[in-house]
Image 1 (cartoon, rainbow, N blue to C red):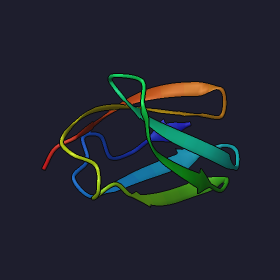
Image 2: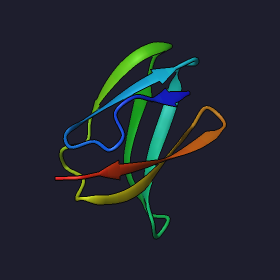
Image 3: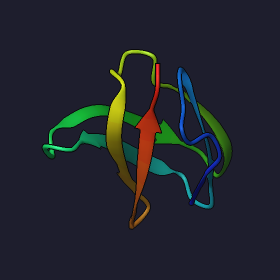
Image 4: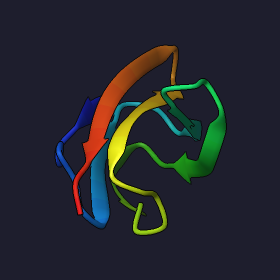
Length: 69
């Protein structure tokens, strides 16, 4: 799993090797967003998230992302 746009403002571009459900957690460990991706290139709207550090979990991996507005 590779995240293309980091930091992000509105759109998070994700290249994934697997299809499945992914979750976004804030630094307190609270789930703040959930989405599904398909194998290949995916575009996820993260406009509703506040600026800050988040963790995307899915496909047996966790990746830190930064939202800057």
